[in-house]
Image (cartoon, rainbow over all chains, first blue to last red; front, side, top):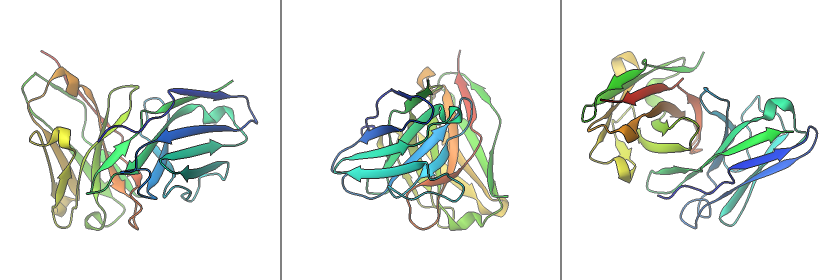
Length: 110
Length: 120
């Protein structure tokens, strides 16, 4: 159950788009359409942004979108806003009732 | 509203055990799995395991097997995570999280987190 691989940091200017990758294996990301993404502000609990690769819970702006190709999932944040500065974590179901998270990506809005 | 409220911060000595609670409200506690996730401050999230509050079925991450026990008390809508043989590596924040309905394999409701400090 190795962690999924995310870049430690990402950045973009207000209004731009930024994409964060999440690479796993054929036993987790590649095998299940069960990738989810979370945003976490300092000192707070994570908040669900995307589930089942592309689905957004109610209340999450459509500026946030997800995709997957092979063993790599991606989160795209469009129209960057200052409030998007946070840590972003991916997660995948890994079979046999187990889950795995990524290392987290700190997004900076320049 | 739907929420999970966790017990307060703990300070433990190496070798001791800690039990963190997670009280659910605003939804049917037995209908959705409860997971436990931990995080060293500023570090990655780490899945520890899950419990089905209805059946009591548990599944633990391999690295915690033998050291973690997840239980629940359905009469008070509360889940528990018990971690034994604590070391300094267990000085992290522990979160409980509800699995989103519909077999989504996602976590839609999170507790506020419980900081556990292991120090002699």
